[in-house]
Image (cartoon, rainbow, N blue to C red):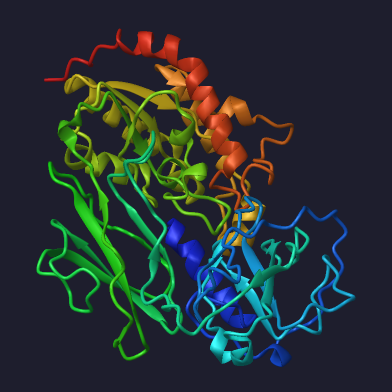
Length: 471
């Protein structure tokens, strides 16, 4: 039986379903009043981490609007966050527990930002001399807290301040190493009142910044229920691309205006020396809530050399082979780091087929004067995959992974799998919550392993010669 291949967007679909069952918040969706929200949680045995740090102060001299942006520091172990709001701080406020005296409660937000509509739950606090207060804590996949609440943050407001009138982009490219994706991912903080979003990609700056109408420079558009979109098409060219997003109501009418257009550039003529070619493990993302534009979850972030990321989430080894000419050859990198086959093997594809695909990719590289460097497949954790995706893993996956890695070790390679060796050959949860996509600590180990191997493996890569084709 052919099993489905998980792309990172499927994680968000699962989270949204989970959210709907628990009355969880999706940014931009109004929550129920506090009295309709749960006010108690089951006790957690593990010690709680310190609470997040509020990053958006709104003092009396610089008050917020009635619908402000609230930001807090990321907790890389979090899947979601809970928020509480208070018109007055209770004397018995506990940092470890939800308070029954909050005026508003947000059960879960899947990013470290929120756009509340204060006039819908605490209208009397707007413009007063005393502040509203808010606090936030980090939650795990099971819906249990992993941190204390943050210190209550005072929030002064003024009706004279303009509301946030568009989604706020939070995917930014081309600023540091590892931030060039052939298949970009667009993510944003939702604006209040929107229940879906329209994203458009442009080949020039929009002629109507801050407007509500599509741009004449639009080359692609999609409507998305959540706040992230994986572009299904490669975006490469000599000119910058731009993306922007607007909120919509349930009928498709605009809620506010388009966001500011964000530039990104993926130019094959930029003389890329190193390409990264693979599936979602190389594309980036992890811990269910983080995508490829959360750069801490990309091993390319930790490399000592610039790279262009030619990976696509969801790829099998066959899909990588099929798109090689289209996606790799235009860039013609000197070296190509190749990591692929996990999706195939866990879905029941025989190791022999994956080895054939990888060997064909290797030969294509050599025939085009690209130096291939294969990387061994890190182990997976089928139990965690089942919890995260409700998906079975092929029963003989260990044997099949071992066969593929044995082939890779006969070629010029970097041994990533050895960096995650364990007594039971299962990927520990501390490295990948979902059992497949390595989290921050795992991506750091991948980056450090590649850096350490690079001086010797790049020298070996220069010695490779393409096989003579059969006649």
